[in-house]
Amino acid sequence: MLEKEKLDGVTVSTPDHMHAPVTMTALKLGISPYTQKPLTRTVHEARALTLAAREAKVATQMGNQNHSGVNYKGLVDLVRAVFLGRLSGRMLGQIARFGHRVTGDRKAPVRIPDGLHWDLWLGVAPKRPFQKKIYHPFAWRGWYDFGAGALGDMGCHIIDPVVWALELGPARSVKYEGPSPMKETFPEWERIYYDFAGTKHTLGKNFQMIWYDGKKKPTAEEAGFPSKTKIPDNGVILVGEKASLMTKHGSGHLPDFYVDGKKLTYPLETPKADDHYGQWVSAIRGEGTPTSNFDYSGPMTETVLLGTIACRFPGQNLRWNSDKLKFSNSPEANTLIRQTYRKGWEVEGL
Image 1 (cartoon, rainbow, N blue to C red):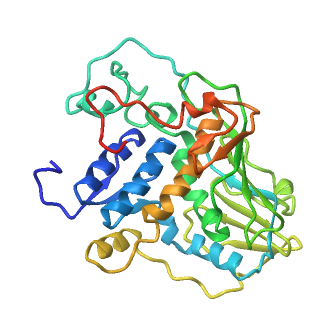
Image 2: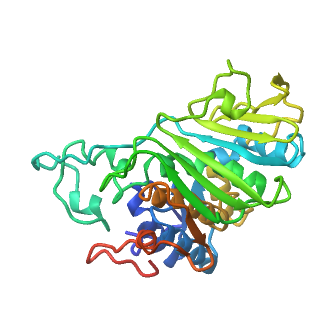
């Protein structure tokens, strides 16, 4: 279809494992892609799309629409205005409301429903028989071959404002705490510890970001808030020298702002929300640049996806070399950076 139709843009909303193949095909044809989060399923794919988008010189946007919303813009403004002071790195909570664990148990193959082209749905993933509710229509997120777990699903939303506000570069290491890994599926809960080089917005030479999902969100005390403070099921916590911040994901509300345990009124002018989709359409017309274009969202996706590799190596501190796109201390982890596509589904550039 992409080769036959004259298109200006294409939106990519497939399961995660097909994001990169469809998006790369569009880029190679000079078509502007709007690709849902996570931008890709693997770290290699994220790097490849970033580079291909620069070469194609077309408008690109990842579908983390809260990047254009009031609550995350408000978070960035508070950090940049130094109302929190420099971020201490002693506590940064990323909270996701659910895990995407599935048992991996399969039943006897069943008839493929009318209207579902199973081989096409599988795409680049290894071939397997259709299983009702095991993969399709939602549980695919919990399988390594198709999705990226809760971290991949929500990380490109929730980690986004932290990377953006603090101007973080690539993670230097990543470590997983959680249940023993399953052979084919993501954990029921996890804590992922990312280590970054400090920036002008942080205190010291190191900065730690902690991602939580499933049943292990932080307590109010861990986050530095009064004991009765309600921690949102989905959101961001930042702790600084002067104050702390907490914002609920997707709320459309300004962040909660605390000094010495007391909740205060948001101290800045309310930022203006933008149309995330509209940015992309306008850029296709030659008007402006989308704020979550692949030059930004590609590297940020790489950071998120490092955690989807770490969850298979409990307790190991995996040291990451972004320039070489490899871990310096784990040949086993390096085998997960890139996927081998199913024969007949290879895509140029991937």
